Image (cartoon, rainbow, N blue to C red):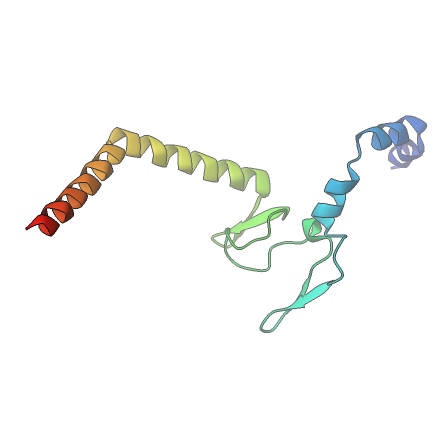
Length: 124
């Protein structure tokens, strides 16, 4: 533990931090520019400052805040990186499936038939 705190006080760490720190990004993810520190839900008080350190309040993946450290999926918490990779792979498999069944062509053909039938119905 002393090694870690020794490195924090080390000049090279401070130089590294000053070189690569992005103050605007830090203010954005910690919500430092707001004057509303709390918000009220139906029965909860929700903390608005430092949301990157909070678990999501809601029970759904899509309702959790953007920079949450963990996402809650089906009652279990997953790391945000793992949850995002799972969503990306599901989207890839869905797109592969739509390419395999040629869904875009079927959709465009169906829309073309609908448009043609409405044009011919107006002429009669």
